[in-house]
Image 1 (cartoon, helix red, strand yellow):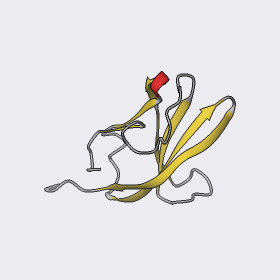
Image 2 (cartoon, rainbow, N blue to C red):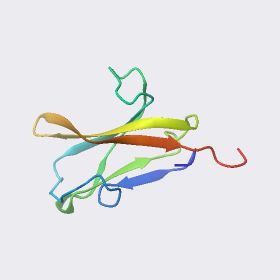
Image 3 (cartoon, helix red, strand yellow):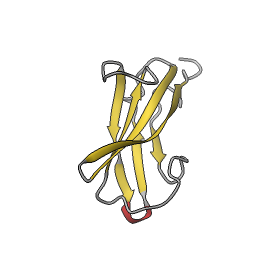
Length: 104
């Protein structure tokens, strides 16, 4: 991901969904943190809510805009959480690398 560049992650094309299910009534969040396994949210960089783009086909999008991308280039860690039926679980974790644009 390039610094100050808006990005959209789609659950159907980003590789974190292994099977399709109806997500119409679910809630998703994409959180970026400076630590891989934070003890609390004090090192959290940003969180964006997922938008259900095609619920019956399991499609959720996370729009990471230029505001969220206004962070220093470096390696961060992401966590995608699903909230449904009164519970919340982590469904994907990984690395989030932000690169500085050339010439900036």
